[in-house]
Image (tube, rainbow, N blue to C red; front, side):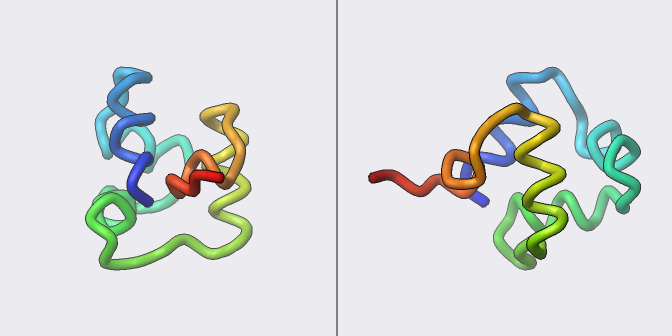
Length: 63
């Protein structure tokens, strides 16, 4: 999730603010950003929809 932190910061959100909007814990967002955990399919969709980006862009996949 190499781009999650950048997206979050570009939207002026703290980890807690994003966590509240997605109904997860701040620790969950932190783990995604540090690469400790990877979000499941439904959370990937929620994150991509929230930031209005593709899942590829969200995870840093380049073609």
